[in-house]
Image (cartoon, rainbow, N blue to C red):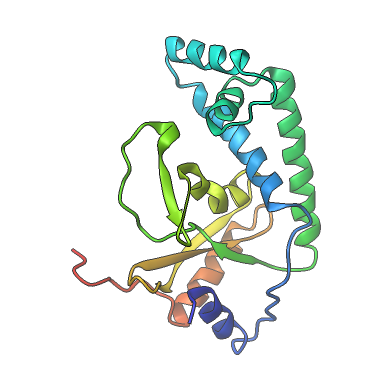
Length: 205
């Protein structure tokens, strides 16, 4: 049984109402774009001046219809204040969508990563990939689930949820409403009582 379904099956008999169709009212792609842009801009503050200048040249020198990952990343890393403000406004609209969502539900339980532990890829930043469901996808797609809560400042508590078919451990996250940190931690504690505690994989040291 998939770990997420095992958690749902454990919560129902424990008294919870489980709805596997509940979703906040926005597209996942939009949320990830907002998160990626704001994260890229924040991280670029630590780039050396020379490297930042190269990113500016790359962004400004690309054709307007060039939406390749490397060019998009350079644009996000060198956002003008006006463009950053637009993404920040989009973030605020996402926060209100979450607020409406949590009027009707207490928590949202999601994956925290799209894959189990993978071999490190130390190649150039723009060339890194991970394999998801047999397909190679950009390396930074792995930030999607963490960014879902992080971009809107929501609490998210990660808990061990079993093992995948490859034998490696799986973590899920409990996303709660703004300032609901204690509540997400309490649910994680309850899930531990229901059997979702850490189990060391074979050869764990």
